[in-house]
Image 1: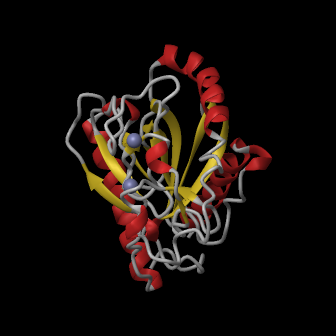
Image 2: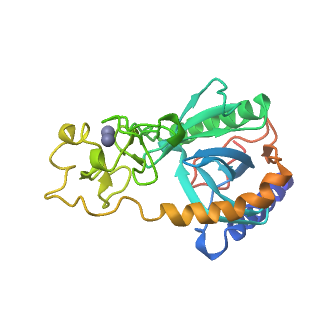
Image 3: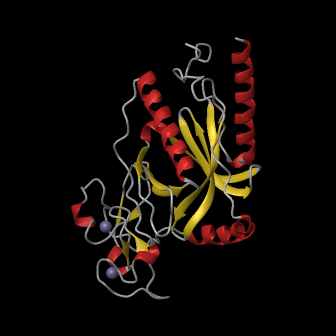
Length: 275
Ligand SMILES: [Zn+2]
Ligand SMILES: [Zn+2]
């Protein structure tokens, strides 16, 4: 019992530390029954190559964010419910070793750990928490996932019309198939509600006719620009990448829970975790 109390207190403090590291832009992470299982740094594949991100695994959600100051200051907090996650183990690629795929309704992306063991630890802990969460709360696993984007460098030409990309012929991504396409081949927009409930998203000429009436726009709004946030992200990323690159280290997976000591209970109950 004493141990349990000490654990609760420690857990609360750890969660508050994570919460504070995101500053006012982050959401409140502490809630009854939530346990911080582990944390570490993973490389997340983005449009502009692998980026280091801080990941925090709780017994019900996976939280990640950009690193401003390692272990101290994070931003761009993303929270994914574990019941909505699907993992797929992957072989090493030329670009990323120890990688795997995380599928979620809004976004699907590749992440990589710094060693095989660390990758195993992440996958096992996420799967374990997810299974317990589904069982204990009688939840159905998510089945709708966003498509993964084909990396920009993977194609020098539009994957629909074969025109070459250039400074003026920019790369875009179809939100439905994930292909790299040119502007002319992706003028149409669609509502893909599991990605965004209200936003018109870019889709390619091939995908658009296959979408249902409910997903497609009532009229041509092709002049609406895709995602205006892209540029801002790029600038900030460049600034961030500097000091991190030098260090070149990824913080190891760190688990807070003894391997066989604690079993997550239903999230609403804090007092009967030891059963
Ligand atoms: Zn094209
Ligand atoms: Zn498409």
